[in-house]
Image (cartoon, rainbow, N blue to C red; front, top):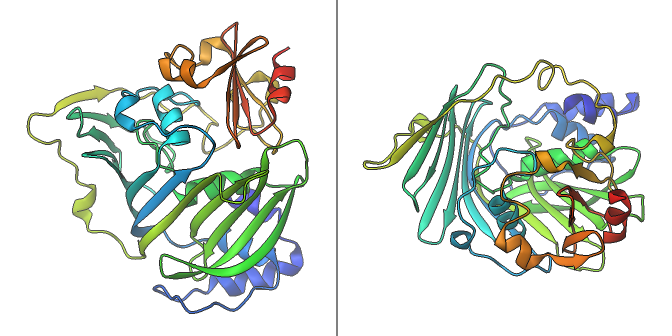
Length: 357
């Protein structure tokens, strides 16, 4: 991430980057001094110091899809790049409230508060747990050396502002105009606003607004706007935030009495997959993330998560089109072809259909 953000910073911005790196401790809702350039805020985010915090996150989507309660979606088990059908659909249709705890790169806990239930994903060093109170089932895995600090469970659909901001800032580049919006307050913390606007007309995304904590550089909220909509199509934001290390007991997970405990064996990360990323070949070869606003991801039939294309909910939400079925929303379109491929992107349906040929 730091390498990617650094490409935004001209040499003239280096003194400013050093200045914003001298951060005061604690939080303040006092209006921060206005930075003169987006590069200064990008530098603040790139070197953000908030690795220890706890808070409550709200997440919601307004994509023109019906809301589907999590209990109607069934369990999520796939760890594929698309995730399970349940997790994908839940993220697109159902609001969430989650508690998040972090203490450095290897201690993380996310608790998603469902109606009358709770889902947990806990990482404590090399130990990783997931737990679903609805089924009273826990899964444990020992993480191989080199596992990314951002690794999360596919059964927990919450997206934190930091995670989502990283995805957009990674993708931002020559295809994006980056400007400053007005200063704001999120969860009683003063924040700068970065506005990312695609230069291309071939995307469904109108703009992305990222609120950045003025002292630490931690992204506090992300609002994604779709073309033709005045309200955010996707929103995730801290409602409460404490920039202090949580108690160590938060990360010491023990399955409740009577829980079914499963042991999962995880493969070691492939050489070059995390520590030394290598250039990908071509976007047409499929499972790599989209790099531009109008990019399309094509997933071969044999790489599509089990049960995704045949899910009753996918069939219910998708409409027949030439060559397959289309799951359409204001921000994301997903084409399931007759030969089993899944083609997705924040682009018009016609772009996906052209990519399918």
